[in-house]
Image 1 (spheres, rainbow, N blue to C red):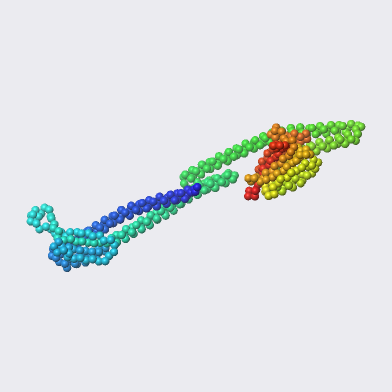
Image 2 (cartoon, rainbow, N blue to C red; image 1 turned 120 degrees about the vertical axis):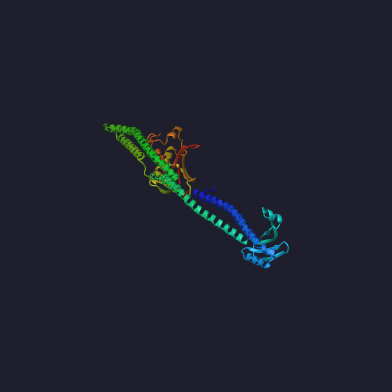
Length: 462
């Protein structure tokens, strides 16, 4: 559906109204003026014919054609007079003069009167009576009248167009002033939506637009205040959450470190005893090394989880990236020899990705799958691109995951392993979210568990 702007609507509406008014008024004006001119034109020639009839009275009474010819010739020289005829009641046509002239001809007949010579009329002299002794017939052309009407029509048309042009120009300037202010408000709104809050809208020269701009600025001030309050609330919540997490993590880390330390302390006490053999000594050293490595891994994961990530995003072909990662993880899978089934798309799937972080996330998932599988189990990796997302499905044929474990699997320090830290999958989720992605976990229909990752592709390069 076509939508018109305020500017064009005002302009077209004004032009239509002015043109319609001008045309209607022009038609009425031309008709009234034409009727008036026709009446005056006709009245003028009636007056001329009446004067001619008065002047021709004596010539008709005397049958003086010379005098009548002179009167008629003077009359025929008048503009627009085509024909003049003087007739006598007794002798018929006395004078008839005609000249060539174009246009429609209108004829006027005026009687030639003379005072009555009746005795009664002369005695009483109360009412003058006249006798008709002849007629004057005058024919005039309407060509000049038609030309005058045409000129007036053209003038009406000219002034109507001039009025429409001037009014249209004024309306254009008027609407431009309004639309300019509205466009300015739109531009300010777009900049505000982009995060630029320190802006003010100007209202232009009209009272209404100034009021609109003032209300808009009040709204911006309110938004800024609300934003500050919201940021402060978020900061307070983040600080409280951070303090709560620090306390929670401290307890968990202390608990996790306490067990390895107890084993190390116990092994050292055994080593202090006299008479222990070499095998026992070697076992105690092995226990100490394992527990020290466990503490080191716990501290590394804790530091990794607690510090904010600073990703360096680059365009990465995730299909090629996954293929290379599988080759790297052959060493992890060396002891169990779990069969890895690949169904990776051949097409390029570009994603803005921090490759070291993404490698850590996918490696953690694959390691969990390898650890859950037995010698006869398999791990399958599939990828595809759908609706602007690169989707990676990692599934195994192991024992699967219990429902209560699925609900808590991404929570920090939640683990079902005897020597696990409970931070691996929590870090995985944070990395995926950092890439504006999503991750799902669940059990396969037949056997085993799956992890499904969604990462947004670079626009236009899906």
